Image (cartoon, rainbow over all chains, first blue to last red; front, top):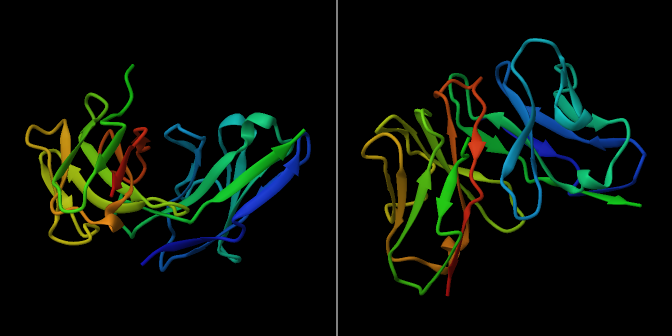
Length: 114
Length: 115
């Protein structure tokens, strides 16, 4: 079964500094990978997705992620954090080849201080 | 246009009772998914519908859980003989089709509390 591991449960940054949220995946084939964001009392929103095209994926709100097969990683980055980025972020993989159902990581809470 | 809606937003029930949770997907979306998110965890897959049929129900934890989508749009998740461990946020998502490339759009969830 495919799985993802988010390496940090909480990440704290100051506004204007870079953001790095780490995710490693386990898959027996080339997976589809996603990052979703969940703001308090709001639904999950797709930030970006990797589906075997370009390894550097750009998403909404200035986020991007790089698929590195050799490291089995799919880390999420942003050059400069904004207060509105404070939320929980989930790294997600499809359950298996041909499946559209999703397997979520445990989440990383991003805290942004002024 | 309207997104995925779920009703009720909150449901409090007593142990042993029966509950129904409703999901209204985005119009025209043929694929519909139910997930469950326990406190401090990521969402976990429960069941996936393609049209009216359950294409994958391998995530349902036991036979107390059942879901239907009789006309290929609205879906209802039904839980019999609720237990305290069923307390969680139940999320519904829909996508244009069951292709893994299609984005899943999530509703705000129903928070179920079993006393």
